[in-house]
Each structure stands twice: as C-alpha cells, then as structure tokens.
Image (tube, rainbow, N blue to C red; front, side, top):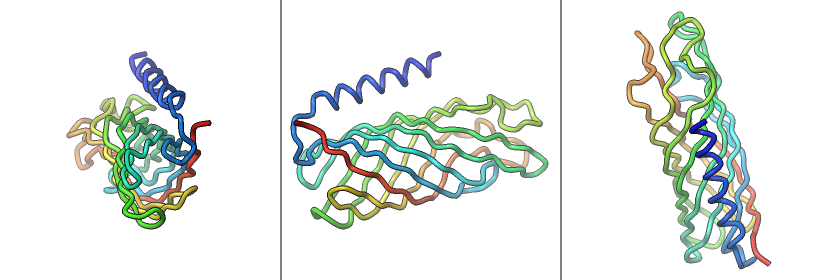
Length: 187
C-alpha cells in the first residue's frame, strides 16, 4: 500500500508539471520511450526490458531538469541450483540532461529511488526475501534531435547485500540501449 501511495504522489507531481507547462518551443516536454538490456553481473537475472516516461524542462537550451519514472522488467535465470524469480523496477527519479548542441551528442542521468516489485522471494526454491528497493542510478549517453533520443544506458538499483544467497549475489542492473520520443507541451 505504501508503494501505491508513492506512485500516486509521483503521478500527481508529474501531472502538475505537465499542467504548468506554457511553451511549445520544446522547453517543456514529455519523453516516452523503451529500452532493452543485458543484466550485469548476471548472477540472478538474464535480461531486462522496460518503458520510460519523463517530464523535462529545458532550463537553458543545453541543460534540462525533470522527473522520471517507468517500469523495467528483469527476467530471472537459474544459477547455482537457484530458480531465480523475475523482478520489476519502478523508479522515482530526478532527470538531468546536458545537450552541448541543438542536435547531436548528449548525456545525462536519472537519480533517485528504485522500488522493486514482484515475487517477495529471491528464488522460487529458497525462503530469502527480495529487497524492497534501493538507490537508483541510470546514466545514459546518446544522440538527440528535436523529436527523438537514441541512447546507451546503465541502469542499477543498489540494494547492498540484501537478497544475497550462498554462491550468488543479488543484483538488479543492466547495460542496454533505448530510445525516447519527445512530446512538446504548451499551447
């Protein structure tokens, strides 16, 4: 229930930003995208696929701030006799982007908290509890134009040693590729 309240709060903050947007010159935008990745290290997970939604305001033509969320599904894999469960990540993060030129190379990061959702156990054949979440980091580097962003990313939820099993560290992270479409806001 606590997570539902937090997701509702994030949604309200995102909508407040959307409703207060006044310019259609691409100063305010919603970014909607998708990503695919390979888990690193691949102790308990194999791959990831996700969707992203973010609100961004260009403070200057080359610097953007905003909020980001989405959902990434990590696919569990068998390892060292464990049948690892899938896990999902719902981030609540600040978005920072730097655009050196109007079109071309860009870089940035999402930083915040990643909620882990899904089965409460790390693996279907053990009784160790899955962590609830942790510090979330998603740096990315890529190419952008007015409408699209194409990027390489590293996504990680830092959970410490929670969920570790003998001969297996619990990990929720991936290296992947993605894209997003920019939807301008305003009149």
